[in-house]
Image (cartoon, rainbow, N blue to C red):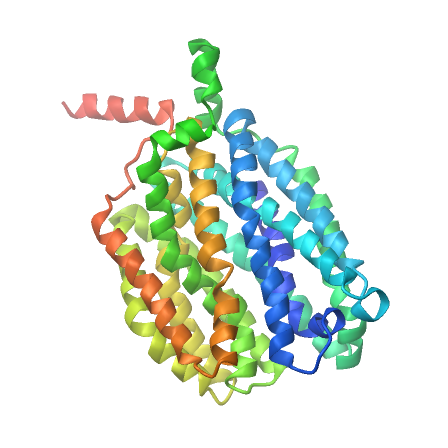
Length: 434
């Protein structure tokens, strides 16, 4: 659990640090005087990275189902390390014209592939590695580590804001966190090579091998995923509202507090850091709660709260006058989002059998993220640039409403059986009761 979570932390640190430092390097890669337009360009590259997530989800999800969760986790962190180095050494517009923006784009595409496989591999690994009655708790550490990765990036930003001048940050300081990310990824690669494989995968692999090549050849294929297309569509639909809300209240929040509420960059960054730290701390509590009462109550609470609460919360955040008011409103929003983030990994993994679980989580989730999560910040900035910023608030509410309908209609997955060992334990318990 620790090894899987630490790797996930570094992966998402590398992914999110781009958004955290975009306000400092946007000027280096795009000419012009319109700051919002420059941010839209960097947000566009951020969104393009999401387009590779389905590709990474397919390739690395297939690898995780055929060769093991451990091998896929090792490959994803290697790709992320290479991408971080590319961003750190990218030339500026003044030195190489749009070549620097091209390097950024290439790095984000590579990161997109990596994250596309990382989400499913880590979600599957953490869920399968947990006890049956603690899968909600175990899978909640995915968003704990994701958020801690973002916190690490924000923490570095805060330290640099207090130790470097604004000119130094814009000139060269923004490159430091990407170099650090490459080093951390190397450490995680060493850790992940020593992870044990999950019992669910090894047992299923033995069964497949005993059943012959035909059965084993179906592992992690699109044909097998098509046989579970209803579950795949369910993953996309239940992801829709959650991913839009998550990226709205995490990666976009700092920019919104700066550009719309008028807070200083240092203040807005500190608000995001504090809110995310508390957000990470409550994930395991919500995961434990889902192990007791089921997954659907938390999902429904999230979607209902996001549907009716986004407009008033974002409007109030846009008028926040200082640190404490912005922090309080941000925490309310993130507590609502916790109903989704704390358990979504477990819910998705519990929908599929072992031989197709990683790909079943990876591809539909990555598609939903490419279409909705990755474009959330760009859409928000587009509404702002067009003079209709509140239109984005209704967009977030509408996405949450779609997911709310899905949550109400879907079955609860808490009691799903993921491995032969769980099946034997359940059968023995049922026999004892009889």
